Image (cartoon, rainbow, N blue to C red):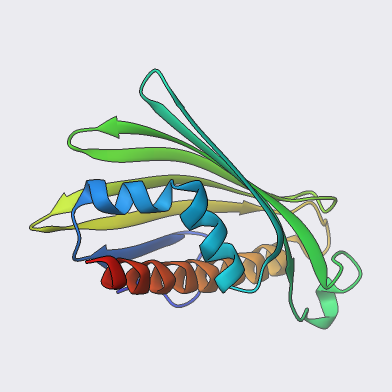
Length: 171
């Protein structure tokens, strides 16, 4: 269901096909309750979710703590527990949805900027995200960006496996 198993800075993309329609998936991935449930199911802590809709724009923000094992080169820049701030702004586009997103790893100078598309495909829909990792670490920047990108891809796989289970339960 995903196009790539490893982060490739020349083609950073994740793709997941859901059998449910675009509106059903959009409502799930922008629901504060579902976003909270997803974060907690994935072991994230101190989750705070905000969502609003105004003028055809749906905004979400998730602040949460994640804990993970770090490779040796990253241990001087990151703590095993970090706070993530993730923001997305969604708009209805051509019968689907499109978002600009940004995830910041607080206190590290690392960010992930993204463009997300949710488009109809037969009776279901396709979730695609293109993203760019930026890390401010001069000597190990590329290695760090690759580590963050690989971690982001695994997180996306886990998130959409969770969504698939939730959608299967409700549908």
